Length: 109
Image 1 (cartoon, rainbow, N blue to C red):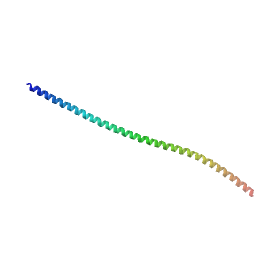
Image 2 (cartoon, helix red, strand yellow):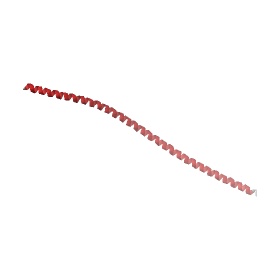
Image 3 (cartoon, helix red, strand yellow):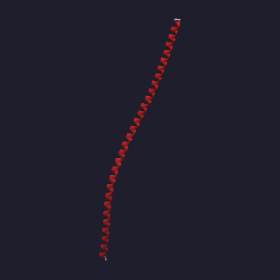
Image 4 (cartoon, rainbow, N blue to C red):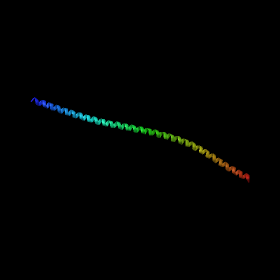
């Protein structure tokens, strides 16, 4: 009968070893899954960072374009003002020339 308890102890130890191995395999598998999930998250974060970088560069380019457009509009406003002054001067000269023509006609009569 002494052999039976020794055999059952060996069986219990074998079962315990198998259950510990099973638990370790489960833990290793879980850790592997966690590492894969973490890797995916890091890659996604890296991609997000890359997209944010592109967006920031595009925003800077747009801001430069807007500033350039504002500068162009200011210059156009100045040119428009100068053209209005020139138009007024031309209109005055046309009026003066009409008056001069009338005076010449009157003198030539």
